Structure formats: C-alpha cells, structure tokens
Image (cartoon, helix red, strand yellow):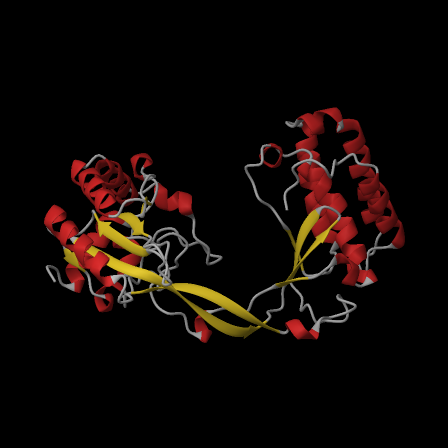
Amino acid sequence: MKHSIDELLGIVYCYYPRGVGLTNDGDIDVQLCKKTEEHARLVSARIRASKDERWHSMLRRIAERFPGMLMNHSLHLPTGGWDGCYSFTINLPGSASGPIWFHVSFLAPYYIVHSLRTVEIVKQAKDLFAVEFRDVRFLVHRSPFDPSVVSRPDDSRRFVAVRKNYASFDLSPEAQPCAEWISRDIEATFGCERMPPEIGTVLVPDVTAGLGLPGEVRLYDCLFSDQHTWVKPSPHDVPGPGVDVGASNLTDSLVAVLTVLAALYGIAWALMPEVQSGSSYWVVTTDGVLRKEEVAKALAKIYLLLESPETPRGIAAKRELEAAARELAALVASWDGEGEPPAAMVAWASSFLDSRIVDPDSEAPS
C-alpha cells in the first residue's frame, strides 16, 4: 500500500465534508453537503477525470480484447454526478457468476475488482405494510397481522426471505484470467495498485456518502462508489421487510381513515406543481389513526395553495376545491377528534373521490 489508513482518511476529507449533512431527525441533508467546498472539489475531480484520455484509451483496448462484453458505468462523469472512480463491467459469455466489476479511483491511486454475490436472509416482517387504496399508495405503520387493521392476515407472510447483493472479491476461476489481463492494463495506465478489502472496508466515522450515515460509510464508498454493499450482510444488518396488503383485506375502521386521507391529500395534490410535473414521488404515511390536529394542519396548507393555484387542474377546479375544503373543515370542526372519523366525514370523502374533481387517471403521486 502506498498510503496508511490515516493518509487515506485525509484524502477522503478533501472531498467529503466532516460532520455536515446529518439532520436532527437522523436523515441526510444532501443539499447541505452539496454546498461545501469539499463537494465542489469532488465535482471538479469527476469532470476532470471524464476528460482524461488515458481512461478512454484504456476502454478502447479492453473493448477490443473483450468484444461485446464491456459496459461503461461512468457515462455520468462529465456532469459531475457521482462516484470517485471509473467503473466498468465485463460480462463473460456463459459465465454463471455474473459480470466482473472494475473500479479505478481518480481520487487515490488504487483500483478494485469484484463480482456480485447474493445472500438470502429470512426475516420477520416488520410492523409496516403498503396498500393501494383509492388511487393512493399508503404506508401504514401497523403490523400487517394486526386484526384491528387487517381483517384477514396472511400468517404465511410473517417470515420473508430477503435477497441482498454484496461485493465479493473472490473471483471465480473462469473470471480470473480476464481480471488479471485487465488489472495489468489498469496498473500500467494509471500507475495504481489494487486496494485490499481489509483496507477498503474500513469505516469512515464522520462523513456521509450517498445514503450512508456516519458510522456506515467505508473507504470504498468514498474513494470508489457507494452503489455497492461492500461487506456480506448479516441477519442483524438486514431490516425486516414490509409487505403489501390488498385493499379488500382492510378492516372497516382503517378503510374509513384512508378514505378521508385520500380525499384530503387529493385536494392538496391537485394544487401542487411538483406533483403535476411528476418531479416528486409521494406516499401517504399513517399509523391508521385520523387525528383532528393533523387534518386541520393539512387544511391550513391547502388554503394557502388555493390563494394562487399554480396547476392547470387547480386553476380549473379552484371553486370546487375551495368548496370541498370548506365542507371538510366544517366536518372536522364538529368532530370531537376521538376514535374513528365520523360517518358523515367518511361519506363526504367517498363522495368527493367519486366526483373525480381529483382525476384518478392523471399522474398521481403514489
């Protein structure tokens, strides 16, 4: 190795800001990371790398040596998009082990070669299920085996086999001659050496990369690509999966809640440009309980959107949407907020959805 781990971490910190991007909710603020000097440096490195003729010449040589087998995974680099490396695969004819992946870092003088393996882990389904209801996709934070929300639970789905791909550095015998030939070309072209897994999988404690949180990010993620899982997942690392439930299996009480929510968010979505343009992918999240204060908060946002509707549907149906919002507000005001939504509110929501003011054949978020 040309560098110690401390030196490699120093290289990482040139391109990834330390302690930036983690919100109080434990999520990653990508836009905040993109405003840093480190990220600007990384984008410049990507664009500069895309113009390096050594890379293009090497690709041509490899494509001639392995005709029809090479796929370039770095076409995004001229835009400064993502990764800290050049990436390509070789798909050997008749190979049962899948394509061979090659990554050549342009942030540090190292490269790696791997294939993808799959591990199957049986996990208990988590307390979350998805359901398509009234042209809306709902994520319900309740157990799909809870009889108070699912009338006919499918006990056969309590345990689900989850398949996860991960990078394996132990290449099959059929892949080794190809990998050796290309590795020699990579080393001769860029003067780099192969980074061993015990180095590349070292955790970087205080940066984010892609969707990786601090403490989850590895040197491979930063110096190469965060598009792979670099360590074989253990059962502890894999969360239980959610499951899909058919709308016909919901209890009447949950149907009542989802009906009101579908109408409420249908009004809002008709007024939101990002939904009309298809630039957002939304779901409605609920724990299966309708709360008066949450409905009132959503209505307040709807009133703001109604002041100057920016979508064709919102403009055309402004009068109808205003009337619908007022009707729902009146029903909410007369509700004590306890238990299921009242029958009158559910009946109103069902009638509103059936009226097609909010067109279910349009591009609705789901």
